[in-house]
Image (cartoon, rainbow, N blue to C red; front, top):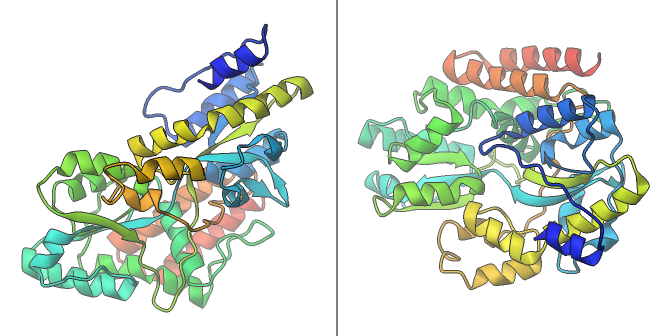
Length: 368
């Protein structure tokens, strides 16, 4: 639709679209765009994972976004996650935040009728469910998107994830306390060591009571679950005494053009790609948070508004920027965080040792 609108407005202008293969991850998308640039084909507009903003700013000098072209109904508070040092580079399109999926049928079998809001409640309730059902009832991502939950736990406990100088900020009492949940669920045998994709299947098949995920998979879960059990989506439980401070996942649009004229057209195209109808359609398909108030109004009329899919559609918070690691270090940092999580959950390594070792490795990478 955006292509047709722009070409109609400017006769003679041709917009070439290049779609990534279905199932392409944000990391793979970045690798492909970088390869295209190295081959002499620099795109004017790219979609990027929101946690990869600093990579593009540090390495490819994108154009500041002309926010004046955005629709009046666009929720400008979301622009913060696309902003570095006061300059906005990305208009978020599909946004998600860490949430909790609960199999309320399984929880009810153990006499639990309230949704957990803290880490200690998750653990206490999970122990009751395990005793009642014999299942390992918790899944917290331990690969792929593990970084988002590590960041959410750390920030929600008042610690720093990334310091201003690009070093890790969570080797502190508050940071280690926030991550204690990983060691505890491992020690108590509350989680199976499976991949992110398999954890979605475990929840959808009724094997897990508490699945830490993102609302972006709610539509997938709904199709898989059907009427086999009752479930819901709620706020992500935070460390005891903490306050939710959630990083944004998802994607957005950036102007990468190295030509001023094409950059101006690119900004207009981003505005057209953020049409409320497009945003509402995307939210229905994937249950992302709508970044436009007009799109929200459309979704209020949807039959699924009061279903688990509607959690994202009703979301009124302002997430923080995801990631934030400098330069080319993001991929290696995220792998280090995955290793740290798996050491605590799978190998029983202490939080003090795992965090200290991870921070040393991260700082060695980011300070090169």
